[in-house]
Amino acid sequence: MGVAVRVIPCLDVDAGRVVKGVNFENLRDAGDPVELAARYNLAGADELTFLDVTASSSDRVTMFDVVSRTAEQVFIPLTVGGGVRTADDVDRLLRTGADKASINTAAIARPEVINEITNRFGNQVLVLSCDAKRTANTPSGFEVTTHGGRQLTGIDALDWCREAEERGVGEILLNSMDADGTREGFDLDMIRAVRDRVSVPLIASGGAGAPEHFPPAVAAGADAVLAASVFHFGPVGAIADVKDALRAAGYEVR
Image (cartoon, rainbow, N blue to C red; front, side, top):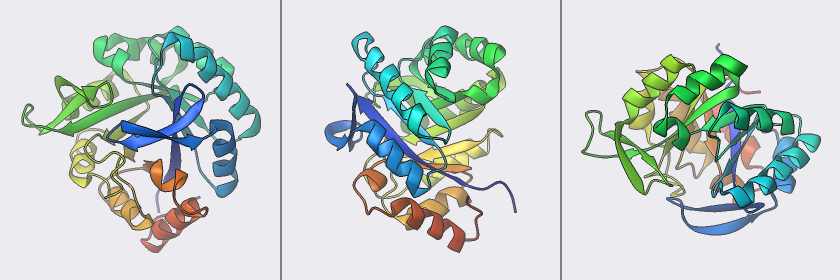
């Protein structure tokens, strides 16, 4: 049996609070990020991902404070993204208490930043966050988006993930913007398509609404499964339920 499948709650943070919507719109408050992180740590989460959904300069200080306070209480790997533009940004996040940094828009604008970060810190610290949606604009049928899925880039998501791997990212967080927040299940076709193009660990995101949604994502090629709504607004034992579903499907979990 291979490496254990990781179960990762995602906390979208806006001005110091966790928020969640559908397709990145109609955001509603989901609680205090430090309290939620501590709760998920105790509930058996394997890692945590924080995404600063506004990432404006005024909110960056808030986010660093959230990361610092969380790192003091939580002893599982913490990935932080949103507004990461340079190797110096990654350095500050790591010094604040993050274990990994996630990059999205800045890498699309200037792909060389991936090389700069991984050459300085190693590829284990960098996660490419790829927000993709179905489209007729690219050969694969999947297109990279920015600004919460609202702006199309014309970039083929499969080509972009492959390029990011070649530039040194340690893993890829693949988020389906069509499925995000719908709680109707992961985009399995997208996961399969990206898995066929890359060999780095792949984190599936977008659409999970019930424990039974997670094993098919792993079967499609995901090494880890990430979700927000199903954990924030679901039953208290949601993480354990997900791990039980994965075990029942024959996958190793921690």
